[in-house]
Image 1 (cartoon, helix red, strand yellow):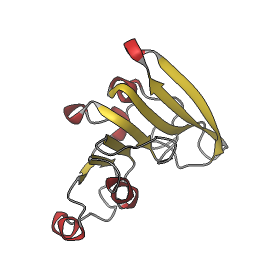
Image 2 (spheres, helix red, strand yellow):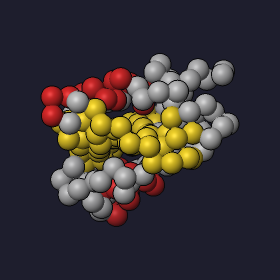
Image 3 (cartoon, helix red, strand yellow):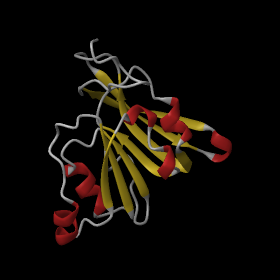
Length: 149
């Protein structure tokens, strides 16, 4: 997913479903800034002090509904979602910068999903690419699956 998102030096990246923050830490070695959103407050929290000591001072993990994105930090050069939705949430598309890339799985929970890449071209034109079959946990939230589904 990181490779497909074509993350470049200086990019501002949003990771939806940040979990422990491992992928965000990996992306931080390439990107200029990484913001992760995790809805489950029970997930292990990252220590900002430890992050700074390890050189991950360009990463922030926030708690919230990732299906809404992070409007206060938009626009993003790349958005990666580590959970599958029934569709690509419009708030995430809206928060892509021109030339921005969004990579996420789309499809029903507990079934084979398709990893899709959406690139926002000039004038907001969307370019879609299917990157193949995958299986991810469901994307839960306002623009995703219900928690009881």
